[in-house]
Length: 413
Image (cartoon, rainbow, N blue to C red; front, side, top):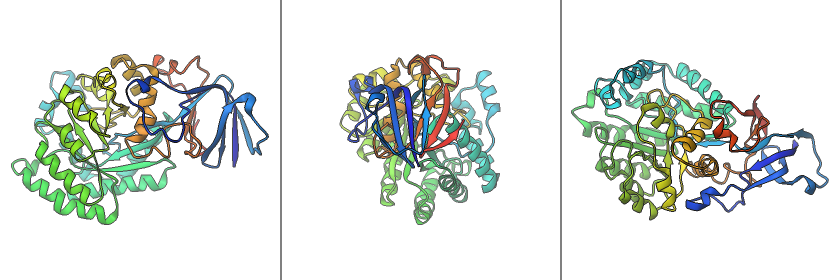
């Protein structure tokens, strides 16, 4: 079916097919067309331009977008939406003065989620996760990465990845799966981390590879979790199974996680709340995408990724939600974009670039999504009537999305 969207107040993030990401000063440039049209055929963008340039198309349906804007759907490159239950009590504990580390040391945190997930059936886990996925799609997310890491046993990690695969098969949205077995050290391995690493390497990875359950491999490289040496080992092994590295680094400490990630040509390094000049210099030598997770900083009251420092180093930056039960119980990319502007001093142009085209890069989806480009998937947001795209982060508490299209079909109203 051919659909023509006309009288678009502004068509945002219009890009040539050769652009895969934007870095440094380029991030402040957001190409748009005012008073535009957009043509899609079935699930693909086929044409766009000024209204007065419309030629005689064979159209099945015309949609008038007067006063409204169209932009590509958000690309959320870091989530943990497959989880069981919630960790509301830990939220209250933090209000009462306990730190994230203290909660973890008391058996809370990731281990708390793992305990719940291990007891949850695959079907129940799928239903909980599908509901969250529907919610984030309605909020404008049109491509998403989902991690395991709340299983921490062979069976539970496989269960999580099978749920992600089922979501991939049942939803009309590009989904990338990440194996994050090295998310935390299970209680039974507290004094035997080597034993748990061997479990990941000798039992989990072969089974995951056999069922083709993951695209990426990840590890939480942080004090009290996994070391730089552990990271080197896990990424090396993952690559033998064809898994591309993506890492959790520099959330609380800079311990060399970025350097080892770059050594392994990681697709992205995520968190970066603590970032040294040495880390920036290492990133300059790489093609690795830095990813900031401002909702996590907001929820935990920890520092924000120094976006200005990253951009002024002529580096790219992506934004993602980190949707998870403990440190970011929200998958709202609109809030992420707004928070990046408000707390990280990113301009609306930089934040939109970070949440679309650079987010797509951080999932190896640059050829499919992230911009209004001929030949890409027709995944886009139609806003309500708004004065400018800067109004999206400005009006941070209001849902300004009217309709989400995924592969040329309405996904929400």
